[in-house]
Amino acid sequence: MTSSDERLNVVLAVTGASGAALGVAVLDQLADIGVQVHLVVSDGGKRTLAHEVGTEAHGKMLIKAHRHYDNRNIGAAIASGSFPVAGMIIAPCSMKSLAAISTGLSDSLVARAADVQLKERRRLVLMTRETPLHLGHLRNMTSATEMGAIVMPPVPTFYNRPQSVEDIVDHLARRAIDLLGLPVPRLTTAWQGESNARSADDSQGVRAEKHAVTAAQK
Image (cartoon, rainbow, N blue to C red; front, top):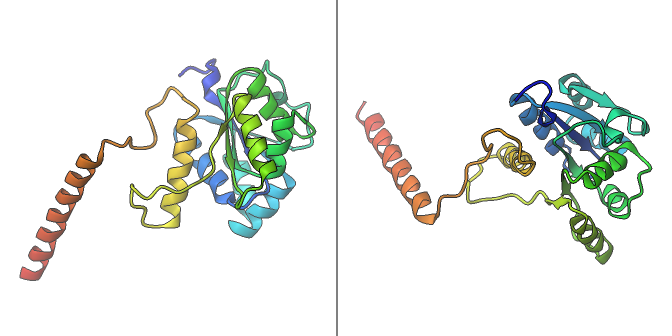
């Protein structure tokens, strides 16, 4: 990737739904692969970050981001389609933000930046966080999908056998980034079929058994 390549830039928004750790993980993963992150955190997002991650979480995100913006600044660079970015992730995406996006109500920078991705035919990944869902939520998800967004509720996977909540959050963050289609190696390991998974399990079991025997003999 070159400095003039639009794929260097990704917009990340954190809104007020539960799951603020998802936004932190996405930022960490993007920064690790050299992507310049343009960060917007709504007032609700700041409150949730403080409650769920810690009072210093927002400040640490501001330091790690390439640039950060006030959610009220609808004149920011990322509010224009002429500013080159590869796409946008909203992690987590509140139902309020989803509703604004699905109806084209660009009354905040989060909603406007998302609208820009749609009109420019760029990737927009919405990690919608709510349960259970009523019909309005479902209709908004349908509308956003019809306009080109990718609705990705942060549903954990268990075939990869996570050992902690952190494992689950990191896997979801990597999966969301993979959906942007950046010109980098995939961050998640592709499923190779159940037979391969069993072989890996068998190999791991044999190694563990040998280790236990060796330890017992010492």
